Image (cartoon, rainbow, N blue to C red; front, side, top):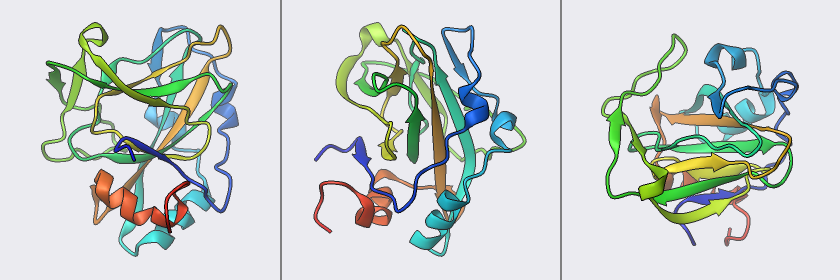
Length: 193
């Protein structure tokens, strides 16, 4: 199996962020204002995450919008990130992973609601210099490896699509890909239980 994504069969449906779905952005890509998502809570996700491990919690809830025909820059989320994503919109949009000969490191976006993690600067890469690795549609709950370079792409003429991104923390630090596979193993589609 790949080391980039796994579809999940959760015992509930993740709530659509209807206030976000009604919004359309004018930029080639847009990361939603973090405060905009503070009011969006999904008690089912929160309870489920707590049920997987007594020290597992959720950090910041992120929302990403991809315009029709648009994509967000190729980046990673630092060295140690595994997240839970679900997109809402037409089926054509995808998350893509890349390999690059070189990257530019930047400190991640921060707000009052987001913690800084030691050594977790974000790498950016020029898509034209990248080699494609894999892609997946995340219109179902999907465990994703965000420590590998990735972007989103919406090839459709309309509409734009929103992705909710839940960041699990174990003992107040982001979980690794291997920890994510272990924590979510009973819900991964297509693997032996």
